[in-house]
Image (cartoon, rainbow, N blue to C red; front, side):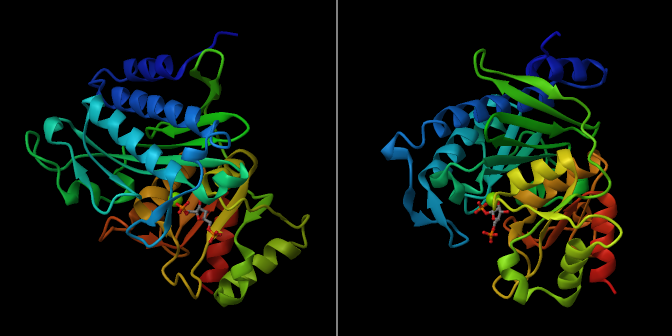
Length: 329
Ligand code: AHM
Ligand code: MG
């Protein structure tokens, strides 16, 4: 079987669209490169004292920053700034967006969570990088502005994640389906391993931090009971890694629902609209799944700030609709 590398696939895809300028292709290749560098250092995390553990500071959202969060953040920024196609970034680890002064003519902005689920690093559980790409709406030749980033999710031109697990995989969409590429370590290339991913319409598993059960709404509690009792079929299995990328990756391939509802501590939800929920929602929809805040389609939420949070119910379409039916009774 012929190996198709990520770079070859991106070029072949670009050739299908005669009007494509190749800028987005270049950007995706640079994200692939950044994730290979992050992957290399993550795989040594347990060995190298200097990169394992806390950076002994907190980010703008009051969360503890791990050294590897900072490392992944700076690698992504460097690769994107070098790429020439990106006029600015916003990151879960930065207070505000960063405009690249030397890239005023570039067309795209990229938002990312450099290392999602990073509290899992110290116990060698999977973590991930999540990214979301928008076309700028401000004028070329000037610095990008906040409005370039605060676009609704349905305006994304590309989105994806990299999961660093027992193997490393990059999964992305440009709005023409979802494809997955597994890193072949001996040649250092992402190779097409999961073409045209479609997610099953019914879940087999549900993923939620059930420790928060007592503070969930009645509708969410009833939906969880439905998952456990599900009388017509076998009850769903509960699978929760605590790393959104890993939980969603499993559900995408095997069928499942991931939910992070409102809790007492996080009444507006915990996960970030721009860095986590939008890109995952775009991927799920492209794979035939669904993503909602319980009532509204995630991709239609108009963001008001970069670090906005939302509740999320995402995964197999029929199961997300079932959750919505309990929530909106
Ligand atoms: P992070 O971006 O600070 O790593 O937080 C996001 C993570 C998700 O990966 C995961 O689904 C969730 O937080 C787990 O939260 P909890 O520990 O409250 O269940
Ligand atoms: Mg995160």
